[in-house]
Image (tube, rainbow, N blue to C red):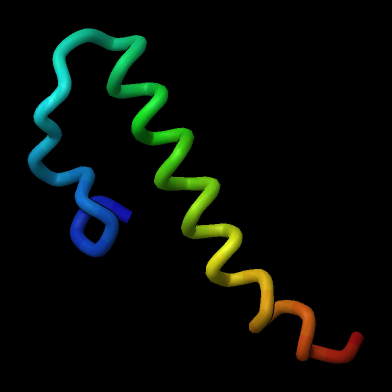
Length: 42
């Protein structure tokens, strides 16, 4: 996630803001992977 989603060079200051940015990036990453997971049959 660091390289592809913009976490390598964060422009925010403070742990709370960086944590919020990470949470949003992680949520977007998981939402983008959702269609691929739904096509796999178990």
